[in-house]
Amino acid sequence: MNISEAARLSGLSAKTIRHYEDIGLMKPAVRTDAGYRQYNQQSIGQLSFIHHARVLGFSIAQVSSLLALKDDPHRASREVKALAQEQLVLLEQRMQQLANMQTMLKEMIAQCAGDDDPHCVILEKLAEPDINGDMK
Image (cartoon, rainbow, N blue to C red):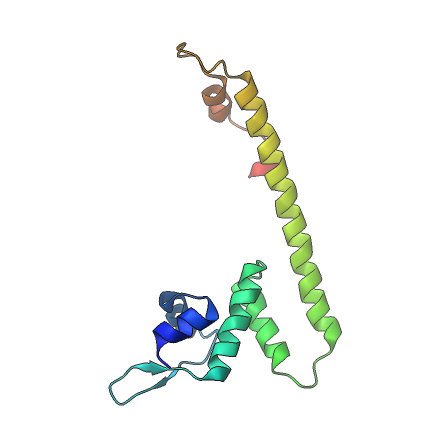
C-alpha cells in the first residue's frame, strides 16, 4: 500500500511517516521501481504502535526504546514498565504545571476590570520579571 493508505490506517500523516523514516525511528519503506514508498501490514503495525506511544506523550527517544523492547523476545517487562512509569511521572509534573498556570490565569482574569479603562492587571502581571518560578 502507498503512503497515503499507510497514513490513513495508522492515524499519522504522510509527512510524519516520512519524518519517522528520516530520523531512523522506523526502517525506510520498500520502494517501487518508480520510487514510491510501499508499506505492508507489519509497517502499519509499527506505525500504529508509534502513533499510540506518541499520543501517550512518549518522546521519540522513549518510542525508540519501546520499539527495541517490543522487538526483543528476551526483554524484561520491568524495563517496559520503568519507561511507562517514567512517562507517567513526567505527565503528572506537566499536569501540575498546567494546573498552576490555570490558577494564575484565573486570578489575573478575576483581577482585570475588563472595561474601557486602559489599565489592565493581566498586562502588568505578564510584564513582571518573574510571575512564577515554576513556569520557566
